[in-house]
Amino acid sequence: MNLVRAEVERLAARRFVQLMVLLLAVAFTVTTATTLLGSHRPTPAELSAAQAQAAQAVAAMEAEHTRCLRIKAGEIPITEDAGYVPADCGELDPARMERLPLATDYLSSVFVFAQEARGLLYFLIAFLVLFGFLVGASYIGADLNSGGVVNLLLWRPGRLTVLGTKLGTLVGVVAALSVLASALYLGTFWTIGQTAGVPGTLDGEFWRGLGAIYGRGLVLVLLATVLGFGIATLGRHTSAALGAVAAYAVVWEVGCRLVLQILDVARPDLLMLSNYLGAWLSGRLEFWDNRGCAPGSGVCDGGTYVITWGPALLVLLALTGAVTGAAFAAFRRRDLV
Image 1: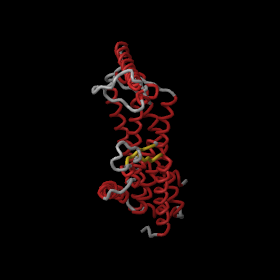
Image 2: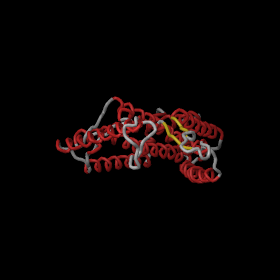
Image 3: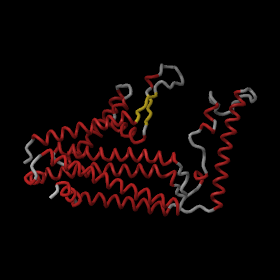
Image 4: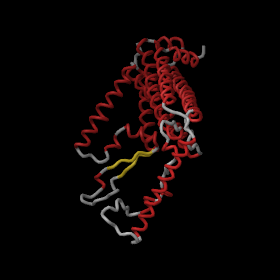
């Protein structure tokens, strides 16, 4: 019997995997039902009113920009009630804004796919990351704890081959399930936007941005799956992976963060794994460190620093690779009984 097919059947037969798939379906159903109940197809009158409000908002922005230019030119005197006048009027130029007000911003109780898609995708990725980590940990942890790996080695000798096949099968199944769930999930909400809401602006830029988030999210799901598998292999139990994550979150992300703040350590955010996760998924995270500004210097941008997706990916790959390598090395040498 083929080892890969046997592992796929074992993975599909696990009750925990079936439970997690059921929870995914329940979460999907609840989110869909909530969206449908809270949305409606806007009437022509609602669309017309929303378009008028958006036009008024853009006109107000243009008027504010013109007012700033006239103040800088000396045509209008600056008074106490002049409000905010930036040093560079370009900050108020609507043409330089990343996003102008749209009619969909002023529609009430209407699902707009273009505006909600990213949030929905982040929710799905978070669930799939949890799914992959827990399934990966329980898949190998239960076999090591129950002696299933020993029985498998009697049928197919070769420790690294067996462990590598288990990991490869796990990654393949999680990847296939993630792609299928994502297509069904986003396809359903796209349909809701077409029939019970508003699609929004679905141009090339929108789909490229959504695709980039999805691609990075899928990589994160697979890395979480491998990490859960590796930690459980090292600890020989599912609870080892759960305990390791809980200990890291409490001791380092909470406790050490407080200590670093008390000691006034420069750029402590560079030491937190959660920030690299966020930077990888979003593409970029920006932080502030007041050590980059001299005391009494007033407005200062010298304390800004960023984490981009490139370094974040290297950190995640290094961590996952180290844990997986240690897991294979330990599995090769230790007593499994």
